[in-house]
Amino acid sequence: MKAGLKQKLARVRLVICDVDGVMTDGTVWMGNGFELKRFHIRDGLGLKFLQRHGIRVGWVSRRPSGSTQQRADDLKIDFVIQSDSDKVEAVNTLLRETGLNWSEVCFVGDDVVDLGAMQHAGAAVAVGDGVAEVKETADYVTKAPGGQGAVRETAELILKAQGKWSQVIAEYAK
Figure 1 (cartoon, helix red, strand yellow):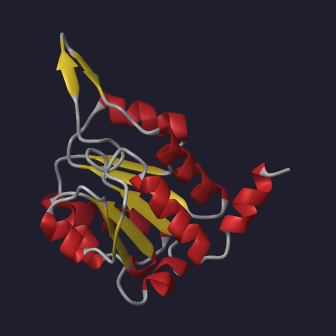
Figure 2 (figure 1 turned 120 degrees about the vertical axis):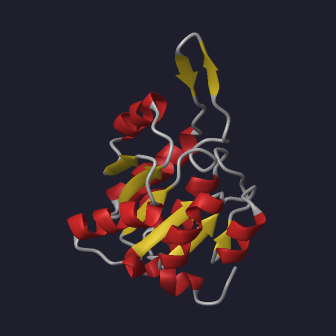
Figure 3 (figure 1 turned 180 degrees about the vertical axis):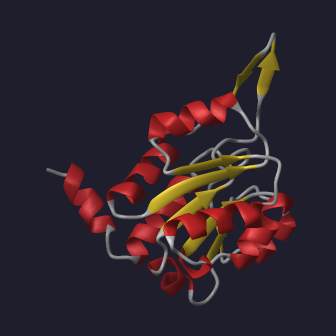
């Protein structure tokens, strides 16, 4: 963990995740016109915890997918951008829409297509099985691999840095 991470996470107001390799393990099952992806339930719950505590969440993917949109709709993700465009520009669009700035963004990535957004973000997180260049850029590398709890781990770090994790626990420990 790099120095100053807690301060960076304390400023986060928007968490943006790549999808394939971050929200999923990167596997896509395809055949007969169907596409299936596997999403980890705890990653989704971690995003819900963030939302319940005032942090907006978004997904930015360069690979448009009906499976991604279905899961995003299920979780009521605040922002979903699926287009084969530059991720920095996609996030800039969200920042203009929200009035936030890059210092308030935590970007979670796994591959070289995420590097630009990670370099701009106030807090950059790489999933545990991300490529070397992404891990080197990151402020934090999760213990969990993509699609297997890395986003939940990130959500907990943010909520702990902001002093909100005990509130999450209190909600369920009644």
